[in-house]
Amino acid sequence: MTTTTSPGAARPAAPHEEPDILCDNLVRIYRTEGIEVVALQGLDLRVERGDLVALVGASGSGKSTLLTILSGLDTPSAGVARVAGHDLSSTDRRARLRYRRHTVGFLFQQAAANLLPYLTAAENVGLPMLLAGVGRRERPRRAREVLDVLGVGDVADRRPAELSGGQQQRVALGVAVANSPRVLLADEPTGELDSRSSDEVFEAVRRANEDLGTTVLVVTHDPLVSEHVARTVGIRDGRTSTEVLRRDGEAGLVAEEYAVLDRAGRLQLPAAFTGRLGLRDRVRLDLEPDHIAVRPGHDGVDGKEGA
Image (cartoon, rainbow, N blue to C red; front, side, top):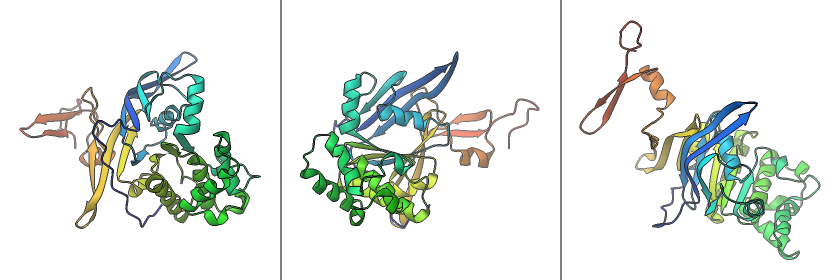
């Protein structure tokens, strides 16, 4: 996937304002046939109101589990998960329905999951408004306004089969933000698109973030998605592992990478770092006056220091 647009700057949070997404020591354990699988093990995540953040991880890293919890489709085994002030570990069925209808929008990888084939683009976007009680005369106007913001107002009267893949996904995005949700959760939104369509969809996501004021969390396995956002959080083995912040500098965009240190003092070093230095199994730690040095340790077999 390629891009020619620079990511927007992260927005500072107001003093004492609760973030739109807050995960604190989040744990999710699945039990099947007597076997326990720990999908999330003490995950911490904070997304401020109005931010656009990418969560990047490989298959099995825990990102899909996190998304199902944040969308209100699952509950954590332990820890805290709060979205726009809603405690997702203690809401009842009716409250979850209201939460999914009004507070959070969800964009699937397959546009067909958001769109009904026999409705036009405008009618698809108007359907969530109907469920939310928006009047019959108001719905078409608001639906077209949303499609215009996302750059697909010219296809408002077409059905999904008449649209390109990128257009379908932007209309699906319109469905997800139709009721002005506080938070948008996007699951691999560009996973089935070519580079050009991917750029168009991400530009639409950025418009939803900037023009509609929606907080956006994009979950993906594609590290190139980080080029579209100011903040990228890595997830591995059920925990947030790294964080990359991008900002404007004198010579263009500047990227700074951080490892995430959890409350137990654990951190996960980027694979590119450990691979280059041959760090594996055990490492040697040296406490210096202003930093901690991490060096290759002994392999425990022949007493020789690692590469």
